[in-house]
Image (cartoon, rainbow, N blue to C red; front, side, top):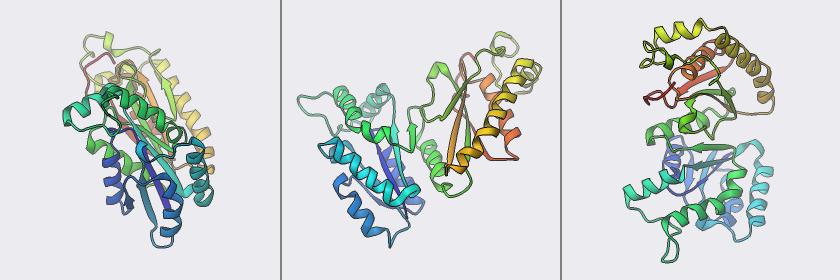
Length: 285
């Protein structure tokens, strides 16, 4: 049986996650008290191959030790078949989402404002956050993107390790879901070439420019060697997914080119996907 525990701050996408898991064939239970998790798992594991349970701050035990005991018991009983999926987003994004939907935050009351509730919820959920197997910052995801990413990570759990190469711009924040982050801002920046400024790292003039830079080629080679060396060790450790972030200033030129180049070089050995988080933005590359 595969048990997926879904948690995270309100507004971060738990409903989308649970719906996606249901579409993948999971038997889903929403907002289950933590104290009932072990009982539920023991009752259903003989009749259901895939179970997903969402937990929010209202259903946590009063003592952190009780929560840790439950999680430890589940991890021990189901080993690598028990995963925690934790979703979060930047606080200003969560505020905006609640403002747009006009939903009531579950922790707000006459003595607790929305912003205070969002901050307090993070503190309450920190034990789950720290023990998460999959952590996703949904600040920049649409509902469709979040659903696709969850499908990619969960549906392929029992297949060979999946590598996601993610280009991004440091101007828009580092991706919290990345297992490794490589900073390529030290490389020559096409942005400062007027003819290349409004192009992307997927267009021929930029590709030719970056491919002619020895430092760029050396960076690609070094990252490739690092992954060739360490990915097999992650596979032996029963890891199912690995996210590698490649960041430049705006996520438009250098990081995009390097991610695409690495995907071509690594795809003959591993299962590799590429995603360009900030490619559509018009900022320094």
